[in-house]
Length: 83
Image 1 (cartoon, rainbow, N blue to C red):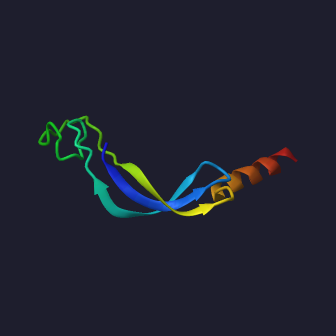
Image 2 (tube, rainbow, N blue to C red):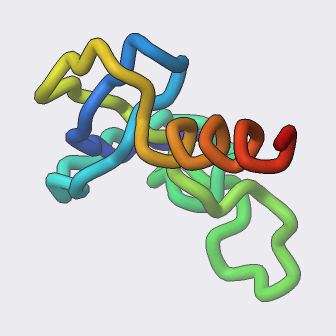
């Protein structure tokens, strides 16, 4: 699977990485079963079922000690429902 670099925030209060943007930097995996690779085994086939998604190569910009916003909202909703 080929990679695409993304930059974002790593939250330590929860295990989430929040992507802020993609840099445009891409790496070729060299696999013949990856449709995005230059070594793809059948590049002209229209019915190719090979993988067509990039895997994120994460670059941490900020290490945040709190949970992400989605986890904070879920925790708040859980507290409100208990009342």
